[in-house]
Image (tube, rainbow, N blue to C red):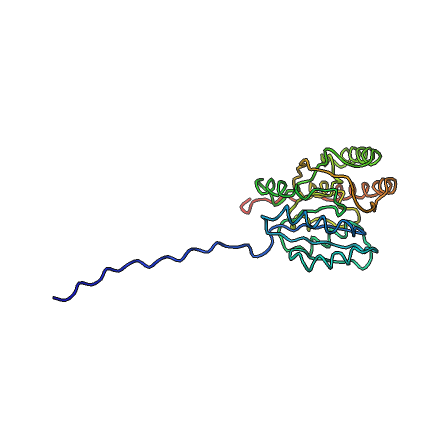
Length: 262
């Protein structure tokens, strides 16, 4: 009798590969000018805070005249996530943020001041909050320095400016000057760029029909270097900026689309 055919054994299934992100999910944009001493410590903190998130760190050197450029160049050789852009001359913090956001490869942006006073450890919580929100593609999450570690003069002047700004612009944001913010890149690119626009991001986002949420964040004293801003000059220029943003709000009517069958 012929031998019975051997039973066909099922072939082992190859393990299904998990899809990996094609690029960073989050870009941290850090504008700096003459912050040589803060470069290394802050990059180390950002990398540690985002160790579990595919990210990149984009530093924009806004025409520094100290050793900031050299410090960034040296660090970029050892930190793969770090990218460095340089302005030929100083154009201001807002211009540096615009440069960084335009160059970013991620769909989400977190901004930090380069002086080390914002705490990078707050970024994951802001990121998680945004991802859990409905309509996150039009959401700005603004840091709120509940316990500011600045001089009394700075605290009082900022409190005064925030109240005036909130009353005139209706942005309902207690601390629009906090450098720690998180938002979709596409949302930011819809905003009109101008000098000092970073202080008016909540009002500009609301103008486009977006939503703003303030979340408490840590704030730390400056340990190294000198501030690039004075109290009086910042207050004086803020009044002309405020008038400009009021003009923008009044000169724009947001269209409301009708359904196709209307």
